[in-house]
Length: 439
Ligand SMILES: [Zn+2]
Image (cartoon, rainbow, N blue to C red):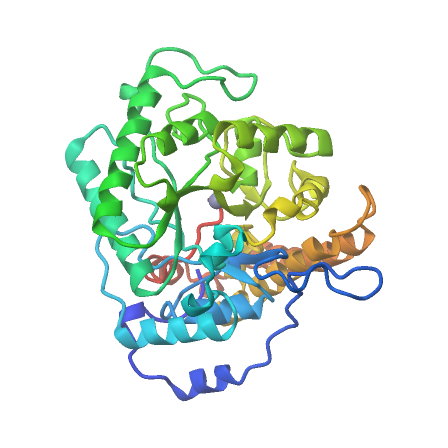
């Protein structure tokens, strides 16, 4: 994906970056709901309100991530803090760490540790801030091969230690998968999530929990969030059922440093309907009875390219997939998400970003995410079905996407290889730790 150089190559701030510091960022929607009388909802309660952002690029250095979050009007963000598809990694330069921390604090992505009051009864979640880096994709702590598991654990610890160096308090990862060989012959039910965890899955969940325990011993503060997954046809992926997540959490000793990140696309793909208020209520009720609401510390906001229970992990832009705008209305009008980082991992332009030179492509991606964030805020406090304003924002996003797709198709057709520098783009993607469009 777009943008510049590998993280380690840059030490000094360039003139260009100094200019970016003075850059005008788009307006950032208030996390607080603006009431009809013009007042904010409970503005006095620290951490109240909806903190919506996106998984943005840390290309050119992790210190660029908070700037990219500002470029989309985000009040929260996710990024990679090590290469997402590579075992090896260079350490983050100290200057990058300092700059990252400075920007995160300056722009309110993290409450400063000195202001935290443990006794004030507010949800502890709120003390953890709104930055939730995403773990390296290669990590599979449930791999039946012990040497491969150890390798995974090394990268897992690397991720966690980076978070701690960066002062980040939340981190989310995919719980992994058993290989087909380690799964039982039993066929997965086709009518939605199971009510219990099969024996093989239970063993794998216990294994993941034991690695989380080891990780806790090697780190001091970061809270590890296990993400729910879309699943697969042979049901070897952990986390496709809320019961998997509950099984993992049950095996973790330090409950204060483990939690769950719910992904709307993954939930829907796994068979949990959230498209209407009744279905959403049933899903959140199930979250409460299986893992406990307090355990949910982050949310990924994604629409799904494929229908309910498709068991395919393909994200779509907000309101443009099978979940639809109503599913997101349910989320943003649910006060229980107050103070929790809500992260878009939508494709925005998807592959069509290649139609543009890197910098321009990044700008257009940011534009799409900023419209999606505005749309989500516009859904707040409206009645079910009254989402004209949100639709207007999403239409703006559509226009940017459609234009990119058209241009991309034209360039592909005319065989304009120069304008789609595949090899270069791939290399950059590896170095820059961007998010793939289908995860
Ligand atoms: Zn996710």
